Length: 114
Image 1 (cartoon, rainbow, N blue to C red):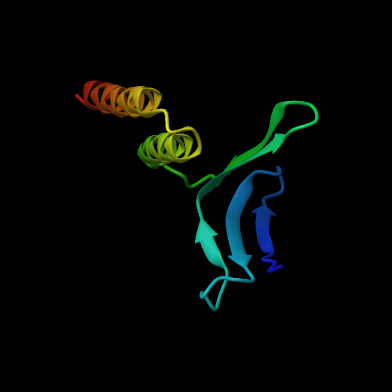
Image 2 (cartoon, rainbow, N blue to C red):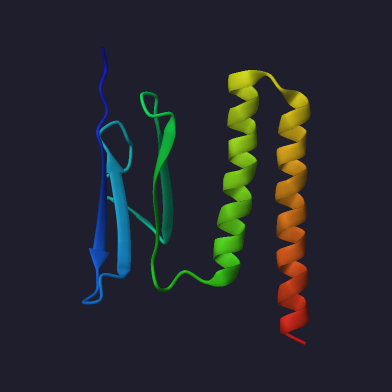
């Protein structure tokens, strides 16, 4: 059985706010740890039937970047859901919501910047 270890390092400021997030994996082709401005890690606890999450973002993560990040995560979750369940209609609904979410965010940004 193959094994890959993923390491996530979070550097905090004096107020325990993330300043830098980096990660690497033993099976990665990258030579150095990869930087990230945000991360969401979710795991399913089958015994308790609950999702366990870690959501972190650095203080230099911009609001528009966060909206892009969430849009991309929702689209990816929809694709994953489709692969796992073969439920095309629900997948389409999830992607429609993600698109509406992102369009609404952009409209709010435009309105606030006028």
